[in-house]
Length: 228
Image (cartoon, rainbow, N blue to C red; front, side):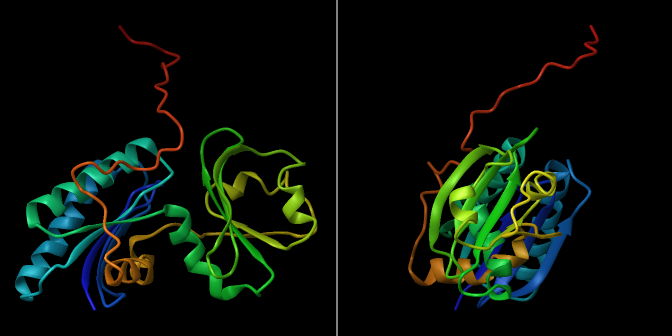
């Protein structure tokens, strides 16, 4: 039974929510993209005002830990670490694919595998495979998707693909067992059950040393039209 502030910034959607006993009290999110640095602080400010005005006690900060956008993750984790340290509350780390899989796990049958996909540019995606109980069948990896991808799993299971990475794979993964679900995104409002479970098990991370799960090293790109 806890009050947890959750933050999710791994994809173009920026979101922040206040959770009480796993249920959403306040939710703030923007789907405009590339606005995390300006909006996240505003969202947190609004929620902290509500906490103070309602005489609530914040028990923990939960952060979506990636993989995903390098810049988005860095912004979200920096905010979470600052809040954890400044308020003296523990910090919870939840892998981004777990958040996504938890959204649809009750919508599939027992034999269907879940594959959240996060866009990693070009034809590359961050993909993880879960069973319906959210047990990891294949760990997260950065995959370049082609027509032969995941054949070992697709030959023996139906697989539901979802997330912004799956959108560019529809025309490539044409196996009859490949199912695509649209408009599934990691959101702070979807972190309630996972965050509550982590809190009850005291599954915390060290806010001083915690780093997001980037999976790949950041590579800066050079603009084609360089202005001197």
